[in-house]
Image 1 (spheres, rainbow, N blue to C red):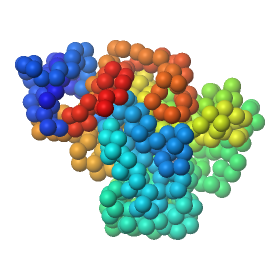
Image 2 (image 1 turned 60 degrees about the horizontal axis):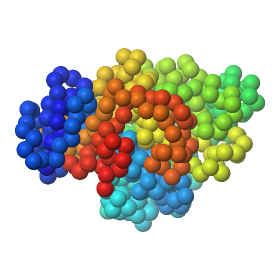
Image 3 (image 1 turned 135 degrees about the vertical axis):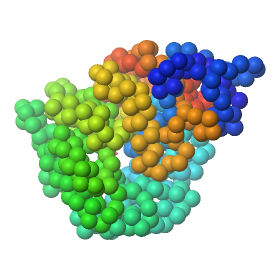
Image 4 (image 1 turned 30 degrees about the horizontal axis):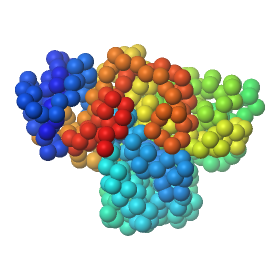
Length: 427
Ligand code: DOR
Ligand code: ZN
């Protein structure tokens, strides 16, 4: 039994006490402490535990950069209670054996619910559909499929994937990048890339695939999820598709909300990511689209990489950056502080919408009696300074090194069990 004393739910109204028993919220109000375990939550905001639809845990294959265990720790410290692990591992998660391994490791570590994402195509090659049904029916109960890192570029394969997904009641999440338009691409196609002599990744390579896939999803009556939306034009396409009734959802990463291609001037590959950091006008449009609901949620695209894959020349560096432990702070800085979202809005974009999109019944729930105690307690007034070496990930490729951020996760609870407290993982 745990008593959370004096938290402000959703940052609204007076502080209340929240009693957690047998994994559920059993009482809310002005409660006596007795001899229960008490979490002093004075000055803290209680939100539903965050859900990340897009995490790279690197297991199996690159356990030198992240494992289910270390990634789960980073997630718990970041306020997450559920994460979806991308399929671009080695071997690829395109079969029941690999997805069941990731799922089982997640259960053993038990810091966060780890849901493996299955590959759409065999080996992420974009040629043949993987056995979506076998993965969906496996113990891992896969509900999202994605070739992330690669685009399902062939329109006929994408159409078939969408058709199967409808029958299986699962979701296809597309990494939207027309590969013919991004051959050799190193940075957002624009002034900065031109000046730095880096081959361009045009916005249209993303927007054309998103438009195509919205049309395909509408045509076959399937749902579609768009990974890491990075351009103003994609937000326009989504606005149009949603207005005409397409069942499409979309995510934006914290780094695309905060950073723009101005960061590239130093040629530091820590800023290399796919899709690339865009123009400042895109950043602004993405914030507005998220506030509006045209972009449904925030997903980290947490992408750990080894030093030898990042501390090298720009063109040889792998794309990707850490995100789990900094996501909330970036959302506070880019969305809450400018008045684009209130704390209810944070709960919506970091917990409720992602849980709904993934079909998770026990996450993103209201903070109410009888609901599962998947919660995060946030100190909205505290600040912290990012130090990559101190993050729980095995890798340390954060673009935010040395930056001071608002908002500190004070505690995370998964089904009533404290998984993180005061910056430490609780086991
Ligand atoms: O920056 C990225 N990193 N984008 C992707 O699509 C893949 C990811 C990775 O796996 O490192
Ligand atoms: Zn991707």
